[in-house]
Amino acid sequence: MLIPHPLLGLRDSQEFTYLGDASLMQRPDASAENAEAQFCDYVFLRDNPAGVHRELWFHEQGDRSWLVVTRDTTTHEILGAELALDVKGAAK
Amino acid sequence: MLDHVTDLTPITALGATAARAESFGALTVTENAGLGLASLALRKGQSAPQPFGLPLPGVGTAVSMGDYAAFWTGRDQWMVEATGKAEVNFAAMLKSEAPECSLTEQTDGFTAFEIASSQGAAPIEALMRKLVNIDPKAFGPGQATRTGLEHMTVFLIRRADDRLAVIGMRTLAGSLWHALAVAARRLED
Figure (cartoon, rainbow over the protein chains, first blue to last red):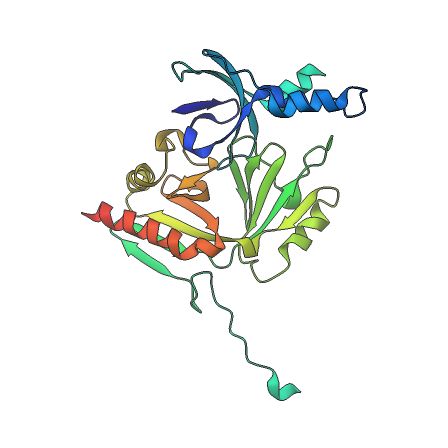
């Protein structure tokens, strides 16, 4: 499986390690009133879609960048990859 | 007290007093024990300096000028190389060139093996096909990358058509040499 790294082009998926759902980037506000409940959901609840899924991959044996990879969980087709830093920057 | 001072003999990453070199057909692998290394990272909002006059290279590339060279290792991060500076404090030299940046001495963490071909690019590319999942045709002179090689992480620098540098973790120097030597030897057949 090849991951289309936004900077480095197609790279072997063995160079990467997988973290999980890209929604982990949306960390709840620790100072909110219902922070405990929000963190409970953040830590324990995950969607488990059959189909398109956005997930975090780390280019461990490469440039050590975090990527948001869009993958179809039913076919393992990689639909795209973005730098997590850019995704985070765009969300602000 | 002075009676107890031992004469210390420096050894290379492969444990010998002299750097190892071995030829396998068209390929010669040489331990580059003299290479000084230091990493350079920009802090937020900084623009890239030009240490020793080196224009720091863009994504996936390397530059060299005289005794100094640099290759891209990540966004706003480079490794700077200095020929024959393994036994001096190269990081301090780099610090005076780029005082605002984050610098870390790396000489003692890595070992460099230089591979040279006497028959042009083909033997270098054949060796790469055996060892790494990087397209050798797209990895021409001036390209540099970090990738996996037999479960070890290495930096590859294509110094020229007929030259490739492999920089790996110093503690794995023996295993890395073994991997390179076995692959190069098999290419002889």
